[in-house]
Length: 306
Image (cartoon, rainbow, N blue to C red; front, side, top):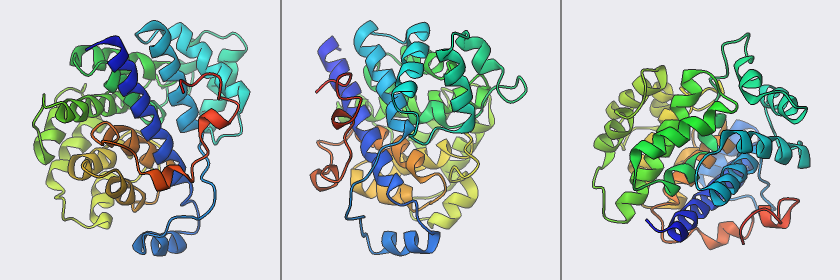
């Protein structure tokens, strides 16, 4: 793959993350109100704001654009710098602690491994930002997995957080390869193909359990089996996102309506799904894009490729 194609696809994944993030964030309202809006396919007729999901994906994109790989030291610095630019973007408590520590000069390995009494974070943050890695290295799955792991380790030292990032990166690469005619897996086979690339983990086994959740299943059943991110962990978030991608990848709108129907951690679920399915789409929905707060129009305008 040519370098200009790599960065083009990575930017498409970043745009998909931002759209999903903004869309999902617009549904943080009382659950009954959200359910009614989703049932009626009623979008919020006011600006949609992006969160830390988009900001951290911008960091991934910056490093890929500059180095052509995940340089962990540089990525840690970019994460901390972007955090300092605008820390009111919905970062979790652990992310605040890790990114502030890195910004104050602590080694990122120490900051990440010290979380949760030395266990490291198993959160969904590594997964929410990683789709550009899958896009950039789509022609080499070994590199997809290697650099996805590297990108997650900056903030997530626990194997679950790492496996979640590897899963989303692998799925993103497969969907881009499907778009390019290089991969033909569908549904159950797609889910198995992703799971087969992961280390032993609860995340891997929950992705395998998604095989038994048919496309026609109710959202309530899918959530009962796969989670909806309410626990903020990779294993409670990524399996449902992959199920959405496996069966609704042909339509960005349908994939995101399905994703937000789970409620739970709706901005992150939609960011993950948006990043993946954007790589199969011809274009992102223009009407929805018109509601977005674009990173290019914020304090990040000078660091995102136009």
